[in-house]
Amino acid sequence: MDYVPLGNSGVKVSRVCLGTAFRGQADDDVAVQTIETSIELGCNFIDCANFYGRGRSERILARAIRGKRDDLFLTTKVWSKIGDGPNDLGLSRYHIMREVERSLTRLGTDHIDLYLLHNWDGGTPLEESLRAMDDLVRQGKVLYVGACNFTTAQVLEALWTSDRGGWDRFVCLQNQYNLLHRLEVEPEMLPAVRKYGLGLMTYSPLAVGLLTGRFRRGQPAPEGTPWTGDRFERVMTERVEAVVAVLVELGQQLGKTPAQLAMAWLLDHEEVTAPIVGPDMPEHVEETFAALDGTLPAEVRQRLDEVSLVELPARYDRQ
Image (cartoon, rainbow, N blue to C red; front, top):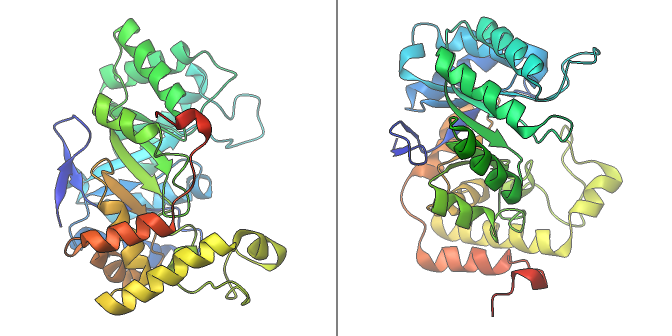
């Protein structure tokens, strides 16, 4: 396992991050074993959220890391609706301060390594949220702060606001990025990550299974997957099919699975600190981590870039 700095911080994290939503795994014991297997293979970077299973994922994680906590780098998040009360969502100081205590209790730890704002909250002043996060750092309950699903403009506003207030600024971002979702990240987010020394965790590296090679245009989606009926037909466009076909072709040539190639493409981006993977069973961990072996040949990277290319809107044309 390789380890890289998280943005411009001094901490080093594994090149792959384990996601612990476990939406496809109802057995808590199997989920614990999946985390333990990942740790045994060298993964020290584990992502969670208070919203996943309404606290279930944090409790599962607490079981799996018992006796290993000091060697792991844990994230969890705040923002999502976790109840029916008027203050059971968002990024108010009230909600942040209450939820961090609940997360610490469920995780069985005295600090969170990376606390992430799970989404933008247009109903709360940004200064209120960032000051609350800075207070958590000063109290020792949080070591680093970051954000998920922010646009580049929102990230830059947050960095500027933190600098102006003298508060701890974001060290890491988390956004969706894969061969099928490039436009949301590449034109502006990647340059900002480079310029401001931010880490970047990318979720849904396999586009909810679409990049595994199991889904093909004109064929019914496999049973037991989120893709069913009209929804699958709408998402499985000619472009998506073309990307999958190339992944299958190149995988056969290189002795890799389509999923491993899709992961390797992400890892070939210097801006990406760690893709977040979400195996639901221990036996899936080793296959997923196998994408870390070796480098992606330049001609393979070029082929994948070309088949997944999306035309940029006119506003990004710098000619």
